Image 1 (cartoon, one colour):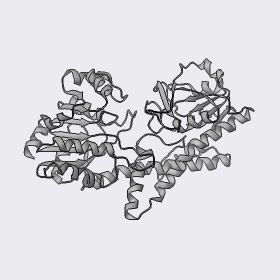
Image 2 (image 1 turned 90 degrees about the horizontal axis):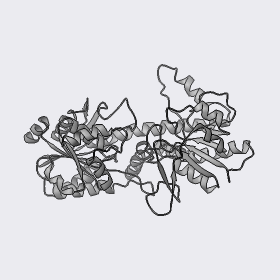
Image 3 (image 1 turned 60 degrees about the vertical axis):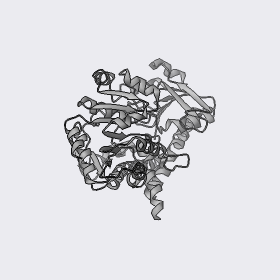
Image 4 (image 1 turned 30 degrees about the vertical axis):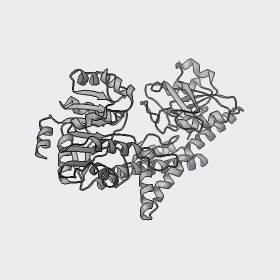
Length: 442
């Protein structure tokens, strides 16, 4: 441990980051900027090529920052798994989605652990950042690594440290969000804390990986339950002809005991749409049913259907059927000012509108192409349809029967959108003024 500790302290430790996505690339750049030698490992040759050219594909990392560390030879990327035998620290940042049955799919994580087991050497620190259910680090990853013949705490160290990346957030970045660390052994936690402190302001060591795993899930469950609660209230307020947005604005004037959450077309992104259901799945192993999580999921799954129903209602007000109506989807990312479409509500909404005969186009300055499968989800192959973002000018709004705002990207005049559009269905309260009779809100 002493040798590895000194390597980290002197920034001589070589670091490998498996998975160069929204989590892995910012980490790799962060360590490289502090002088560590970093190797990024990814199966996507396109990502590897872009990293080595200093071309960022993630908004939170500028190409200029990436290019600097690449030119200094502090960061490079590869598809060659053998590099894992040449490093001192391995950080796993691979996707952990739900499968089609809404059960955890940790195959990418297991495959990463199996790969590491083939190339692991003594005195390595392995850190898992991919969100997962409590027990994964100890019950799944550790046994795979120990098949190498090496022993935890003696030959290598294993830690879980959950990612807390919020894509597009300029205030809170990987550098100033405290890092929670839970090691299988105290020595592992100590090493990981020393490593992360090289470029992250604060680390928080907890007593076990299970505590760290549950911490990440609690953060996301808190959000999904509260957002779904406000979604349900939005549905009720609509029936009661009460403006939920004004209600929230008034409630948040209370200086204690209230935190504002806002309704929307459906929860998107990996974290709050997916992660809570890792816990509800794991809970069944203990004969326990996480009813708040399941209920939140049910309410959230209704929101895209409700948005389509609201669009039909708005069109009917103008004596128009959805079949044949030209509808412009404004924003297909899961939230404003980013190009991330993971689990975006735009998928089921556009699918349903197309199925009902709507003529759909979309505008999103952050998403050039939007691929949708026949079943309404994101499409990577098979039966799919590819839409391309239109070139926007305010004058084109008159060409549509309805504008449906799903992501209210900044830097646009939404009063102008209201003025120039026949009908607007606003799921984000982008249009603040209540003077427009052609605007329909959640």
